[in-house]
Image (cartoon, rainbow, N blue to C red; front, side):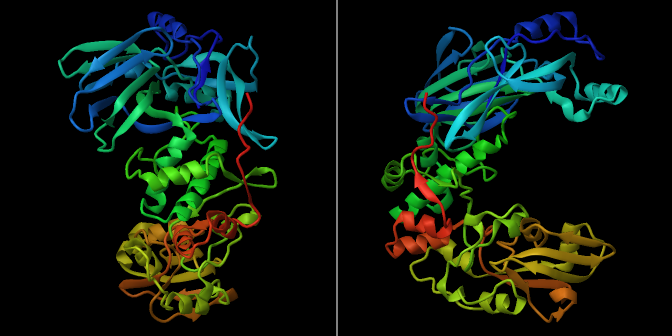
Length: 514
């Protein structure tokens, strides 16, 4: 979400002092403008990050003639430029300012301060809230200066926040070598697919360019449903059966809304990023009729539980059973993310026990009808040298490895490494990274092992550590390989979702009424 700047407290000339001409410029820049994220004609529109940097290039994807409309959002200036463009940020070093946040309060029309919008869930609806951030009347042009002042005066450094500015100047260079100057934020529109910042993917429609700190931020401004149509094929595959695509659409839509409620990119200048940190978004890449049908037939549908939006996290392959979110991420238990059986043959096994986990990992699984990536995620092996493992852990040498706990899915969620010091990892992700980005932490180390105290498993590794495993990803929520298998068995998308997220309900009534 964006910050809005209205009448701001006077700026104190601190050390280093803001030059007088720059202070005047700064005060002129404190104008208010509308945020991009909004409800429009019954749809939620969002900003999705595409690229950032001090310079960004925009070129036609197919090398054809290109016309791009550039409009300043804070003024009536609008121009149509042709050909490929290079956008540069001018005076980037003068765009960062820092202040001390005094308090936040509900926004009123006569509020003087900085307006920030954020997402919240109220009365079963996703709402866009507005708050007024009130800063102390002292501002710094360098973060180090703000920290030094805080130390000298006893102000908590946690109160230091960057102050975003608008109306910063960008220069756009055309193929013909002509320069055009605009003040951000900008609305950029093109009817043809363009490549942005050297990325080979094509995007079209509306984009928003703004400056955050010392960088240009370019986002795709589009309806939620169009965003979902650019996500699901990159998460579960463009050739997936229709019911699996529909299940993925609902899960991805629900996950997107739950991510919005975290407001994790609130100060970054956009609502969601386009990577696995949020969800992989690639625009129209691999888009087909089945994907559009899946999105349309599940339009606006999300999962809720106990009146709130469900956490609809998902992963590639559980390997047999999904896991509890509390086991994997150490948070509070969630009733719809306690773990379920995905492959029936694993039902009667307790995969939290070493012997049964090894037995299951060694059990062949029927992969008939599966794609190559599905088969690869169900059974895999990997080797890592003890030297590499030590390096990944920051150890000089390693004597023994101890498995302290496995989760419901057989994933190792607590592991200790004893050498010149002891390193204990309680994150399945960090365990995977330690073993050279293993597909999952549902693995065992080949060779002999012994029982330690309290049921722990002790391994004395050789020079090469060979592991064998099942599954891919964290193992919580919907298993995409499991969803594909159920869809091929003619199970409906609703039943797929209710299997992996038990206790949830599907609803389309979650948008704020204007």
